[in-house]
Image (cartoon, rainbow, N blue to C red):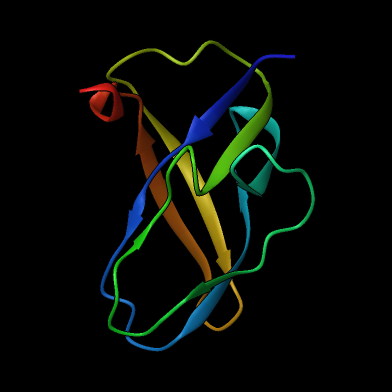
Amino acid sequence: DPFAIVCMTIEDVSATDRLLGVESPVAAHAVLQRGDRQGPVDFLLPAGQTSMFSEDGVHVRLLGLRQSLELGRVYPLTLRFERSGVVHSELTVDLDRLA
């Protein structure tokens, strides 16, 4: 099954929160994952800090892609937080992490 790994940065968290889930219409489902380990991930976002999602650390894996993701295109991404609720965002397909 085709999949994609989403690496991102979350900044300006005013109060400690927890990321509970992620979804995007481009994938059948999305999971929070730590490295290549399977299973649930508890991802706490401390207030006042920047949180990085990386391929080797915590990241989002989009599974069952419904379409090919094109370089430079922007796709919708919905983040679900424990305290902040639903946050609509976007992901841009790029190769910055390879530079």
